[in-house]
Length: 497
Image 1 (tube, rainbow, N blue to C red):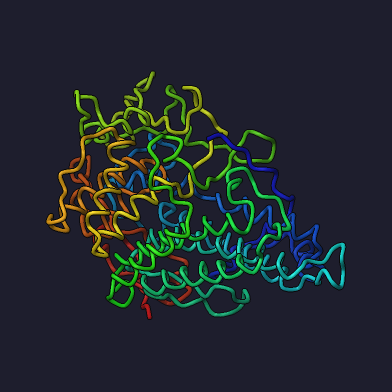
Image 2 (tube, rainbow, N blue to C red; image 1 turned 45 degrees about the horizontal axis):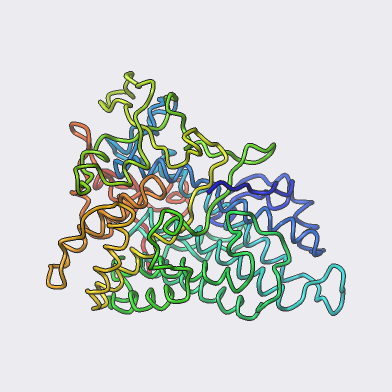
């Protein structure tokens, strides 16, 4: 799918991070003051465009950094050490940019969303100002989109920090005390609450169109009723991740999985899909080469010395009947045309394979979209929720739906009497190759299922960190001490409720 995001409204919502007490100079305050004090339909539409565009910020960094940690791929450009080396040798440091990059950008985006929500709350009613006011339904729809994107931003933070938890109550004045950390389970609970509240707002919006344009990557979700199916897909994912969190759902994981299945039933899932188009259908982040827009740098040409796929992706791939590799490997990985022999520091991983899932017509495409969540992932989320919810036969059917159609592999050997560990290993394999180089799924799954040891370090003396660190500035703001490296990560251990 190739899509293009419309231009971001200049200046509006280009605010500092503020959400977690970040002290960043805000050069756009007059514009923001005007938005907050006089939020017209026109200004709010432009601001919404900025909010939607901001959702993609940091996604490329997240993919290659988590992909490196999970040994999917590597950045061999070598121009930013130790940032590129930490996930291989460790320790991943709280003062470094490797983990911090996957924190500040998300809270900056959340701050922008909170500003937009505040302005939306100040907007005049359409009954008072028919031209620049918004109806109750329009406000509800706009609020739902903003809160769904806020939940998505927090989802990226929590799934990278795991048991460390995260701050969620971040809508505070810049001079207020830093938001407290909450537990991993509570953070997921907050995310689910945001999504459920947004779902209620979408129902209120009904058939009323959103008061702003929706980019092509969300083109299938450009009305409240269809956006609700995207919202429910995110809710399903959040509930599944919560189920495997520490003390997930208060220790009753079945509750999380049941909620996930309910959400999946209202999502855009198409469990009968058999074609690449059907599996790839979903919500996407847009990129383009248009002036002022962002490009997809992960679409690295076959002769470019930047992003490479690790050989383990091919080595670990199972075989189709006849001996060919898993179809997903054949579709997503190709040989580099100029092999990178100059290694990154002391990391003995040569660049020989390239990722091509962001190519178009066999060529690198800087305007190629990146999936947020797609049907293939939803089917695998349903498989997991059904297995641990007691419907094991259905779980196997879903697993095979992806395995035999997307991977073109023989049916799984998992049966209804297989041990949970056998199913988990089979599920992790399918998720690894279905979501390869899209969201760091291999590493996240290995941590949440307690199987980090399944990921080989790929280098002598290497390590696979269990989570990303909390940035040092966040630790310092809360007077939290950073002990010596624990499990190859240097970070404070925030107290969580």
